[in-house]
Length: 320
Image (cartoon, rainbow, N blue to C red; front, side, top):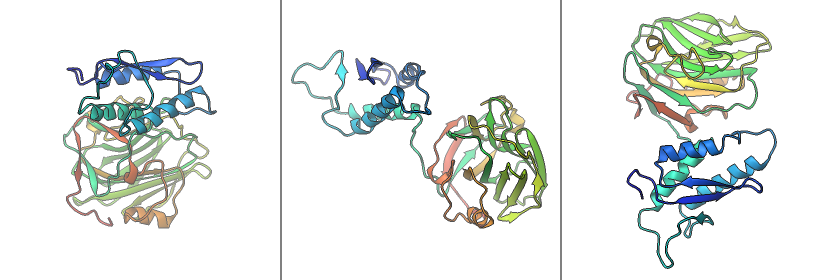
């Protein structure tokens, strides 16, 4: 292993027929190596409409990533500077190799998913520049959706809870609490307001659901529905999105205002591409079994940017 945490040498990863090979310099650090791989694969979209050479490439890389972690000997590859005849793999080299291949897997859009049951994201600072990126790749525009989450905070200033932005619209889906006793639910840049009792220093569970066909927007607080309102009838929510917790996006993936940032604890985040039934909305509040979701707290793929930590929940939320 090199001094920077990488390997010495180069691997030639075979590609699909006609595409040659990808040289991976194992002398690079993990971050530099990942960027090199990302550059090599720029011509291969994460999702393609039809199977093709790129899909074969990604499938092969992922298959090798699964196999290399424990396989001895390694699956076939072509080292430029192979070990001398009779040499054995040095102890401890397989763990870094597993790390490297797990990074490759994440770069190809199949990062590990984590069950966060009874855990929370703690946003420690106020105001904060920290946020959590949720990995989401809906294949089609959303004509219906339901979003749910729990929050625990003493903030009295405006703060964003859930921000889904596209390049065309920064407030494609947004749950914002501008002040105590008020929530704003945005779809496609327009919003409706729901006034609620002021929080008394406890967890709040909120769900918002919307359907394009009728333009009906619903808001649920702690398992109870508020009067429905009309919002963006006939609209379609774009699929290529940046989804963030803790910041409101005023540009795709950025444009943050620190004084709209979240400080406190967030948990039980879900997004469905359907309008959940009232029974399912109550089940979400009670942390019961829920249908498969685009984003699910029980199998969340995410990355943390800044001062956010994952910790066990210290006190039970109402209904959970």
